[in-house]
Amino acid sequence: MRLELAAAFLVASLAFSAPAAPAQQSPFSAAITVNERAITYYEIEQRARLLSAMNRLGDLEEQARDDLIDERLQQIAADRVGLVPQEGVIEEAMANFTEQMGMSDAQLNEVLAANGVERETYRDFVANRTLWRGLIRSLFLADARVSEAEVDRAMALARGNSGASIRLSEIILPLSPELEESNRELAAQLSTSLQQGGSFPDAAQTFSVSPSADRGGSMGWLPLGRLPPQITSMVMSMDPGQVTEPMQLQNALAIFKFHGIREEEFTRPRTASAEYLRIFFPAGSGLAAARELDRTLDTCDDFYGHDDSTPDENVTREVLPTEQIPQEIALEIARLDPGEVSISERRDGVVQFLMLCGRTAELSGDTDREQVRAGLFAQRLQSYADSFLEELRADAIIVEK
Image: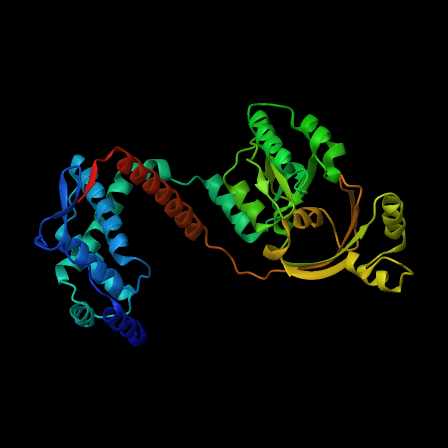
């Protein structure tokens, strides 16, 4: 037994004050009706006690009410298709749930009793989870099946290897104070237009402030292992030719078009961290100064032997985990090899000099194909379950006393 878990359950019981039925009101009278099915005050009290025993935080009575409403809706949906869980299935689910908490059945009974929770309350809780899981599988099993291609893509994205690369185009709009409001409106308009078939290259050349604007926004083929996690997860849900909604970067909005994914001939490890040198040059002579610096430097270390009058506050050299690198910087250095430079001019004329100093590769073991398939399948089923429950709630008549 995990003694610390049992102790947490016992401590929770001491701090919990159970909700009570209003004066002159029977605890077995209806506190809520869901499509004319009653939820009693006693059920709410018992569920709140169970949640307390499970170490839930927050307004436990409110959580109990919400959970029980959802469960009534789930039961009604199961009744419509004649689904009833077998007693043996419920008993097995209860045993598994208890084991996951690191307790024996006898120890669980002690904890429930210490918290004033009836055994039947615990059984109902587990039984409905089992019922709902079975219902979702029966309704959406076929739609949730995962194809071999989806497993291939997920494994490539998870490992950042197999030489997988993606081809993207981008439009970057700055969010400086004077442009933020207008550019947010522009980004929404562009995204809608491009999703309806508008010319992405024309829009990029007209509006984007990225260095890729002259190429119609094309970023070329980029190794997955170099990209920010937010971008790789976004690609998971896209088909070739799709355009994203505007994505918030640190100081900009981005719109991406996904062109495809391919396997390369060699493996690239996922990047764990990257080191980069960033220098800002003032408007006017900044572009010429950045180009001159590019001709002078072969590595980031060369900068410190360079005779330069750039103020210290305009120079940054950082080593950051991939997930902490600002996305607009991560996207730029994804295109670079160590020692290579990106030079870009912002709309205010300030010039950014960005050199990649180096990358640290992430070491990871092999990913099991069936585990990936099971994970994708579970995510998809959960998505169907969430959407279905929202529909049931929207169509329900719920009356709270």
